[in-house]
Image (tube, rainbow, N blue to C red; front, side):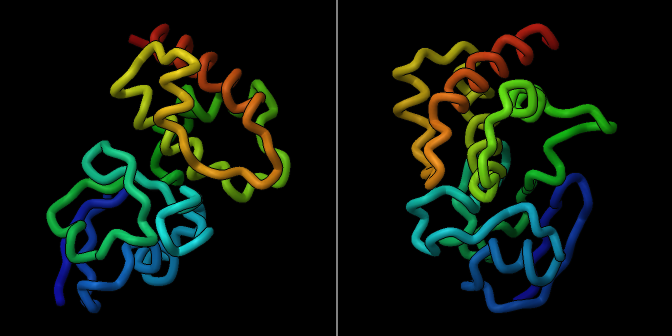
Length: 155
């Protein structure tokens, strides 16, 4: 099946089985390795990307559903060499420990902040449901609040 979409601002046309998880098209075909495989069941969030601006768990998202869509991965989140406010906050708050799950958290947070620009702790708890085996949730919460402030300053 031929599938066309834009990823990180670049048009792509892929020929593959439409039921292939988008994660594998991103990692294995397009060689973008920032999006991680975690559980393969859309439970952990390590594979979170944006499809038309919405957070999507790419391990369970068939590539055929990406046809005609705008996809953003962690590699496309920053613009013109400037870190996205979420990336800057993650850096400032020294969030990662092992770092494996962090691209998914960053992508989920960026999507949430587009919908909820000033999240409460309850908003964060209800929307950022990814899993971090290192337990860096406290630092992430601080970074999310900081990212909201940084993003609001840019507007």
